[in-house]
Amino acid sequence: MKIGIDKIGFYAPHLYVDMNKLAVARDVEPAKFTIGIGQEKMAIAPITQDAVTLAANAAFGILDASDKEKIDYVIFGTESGVDNSKSAAVYVHGLLGLNPHARCVEVKQACYGATAAIQMAKGHIALNPESKVLVLGSDIARYGLHTGGESTQGAGAVALLISADPKIMVLEDQNSLYTDDIMDFWRPIYSDKAYVDGKFSNEQYILFFNKVWEDYKEKTGFGLKDFEAICYHLPYTKMGLKALRTVLDQGTEEDKDRLLANYEFSKTYNKNIGNIYTGSLYLSLLSLLDLKEDLEAGSRIGLYSYGSGAVGEFFSGILEANYREHLYVNQHTELFESRREVSVEEYEVIFSETLPTDGTNVELEIDHDPAVICLAGVNGHSRQYINKLR
Ligand code: HMG
Image (cartoon, rainbow, N blue to C red):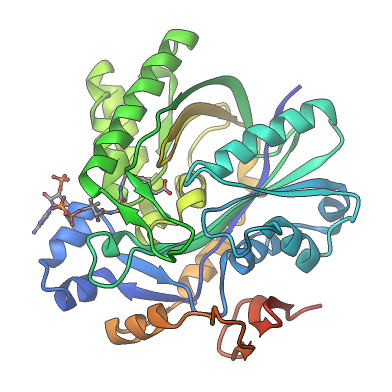
């Protein structure tokens, strides 16, 4: 049975900060952020957007009435969960008006969560070929103002509809996994900001990539020549390039040129959004599919997922015939074009605005947020979400 990605969409908040200006404000050479890190714009989440609303907005853009009826499983990958008990998937299920005969859960393993969700979805579809699974990867990456990780923050969500006979990409069965208990990046439950050993995390990302790539090659007999492109989890866009460069000498000049050229397409959305943790790899895939217009059906795309802590996975997919007809390129172009730049000072104010943690009720101003689905406040310790169209 062919199982894979039937639809894919994303959402990012309507605000961003320019990385050149952030660099100047932090007394850093702008080229360090734009070339050394590889980021141009960083999405900023207003207080009216959280992991739930970002994901709901991403899914809202792609689901039709038939999908809503057929989805019987919502799997929400996130490391920015809003509740230690209730899953973010249940909120999204309600906000989108999905079929009540559905299972909703949240999964966590840093940026690897959405990949775990996709593999769970594949198993579910194999047993229930008629069903569709909504996989969500949604996060707000926060390290803190004036920290080493600040330039690698971001916010956004990707929604993937996984089904049998998918219209965009069939996910192949071969994969390679690697887990090791390391402390490269983590976020204790009492903190709304991540802790990170930056240099160590970079090393481990590459080490895990080499482990899963070598194992994958041994299992499948595939090499660089078999891939049209390789997409990476992109905490910042230079990271995937560093990993790719470690294996390029395994291929011909042609392989090298093709993979480097396609890497450029696969990083474009990410360099304008920043790290969105769980959704990052799929944002990169979406960037490649939307922007590389002559990518042929039948092409094999490699996917490297990495979640700190850490779990890595390499797997692959094959593009289906007429896949371009099922992309939402115009919707995504519009999203990028309608964003508003904020100054570094405004970003600092927005970043510092947090919800009360002492039980105080709060009503938020949602008129300034163009998103369809927003967080409207907190009442009785309960987040109040609004779908403006329902
Ligand atoms: P840093 O200390 O600010 O930067 O940390 P640096 O000194 O390492 O410089 C970065 C690059 O800029 C270097 O290039 C410099 O040479 C270059 P490289 O040698 O690495 O190729 N540079 C310049 N280039 C051009 N012109 C200049 C210039 N100056 C310097 N003038 C770091 C950077 C990414 C470590 C930091 O921002 C950080 O800690 N970020 C957060 C952690 C992170 O993103 N880790 C990535 C791997 S772990 C991962 O992906 C998982 C994660 O997504 C979490 C999850 O799983 O949930 C993070």
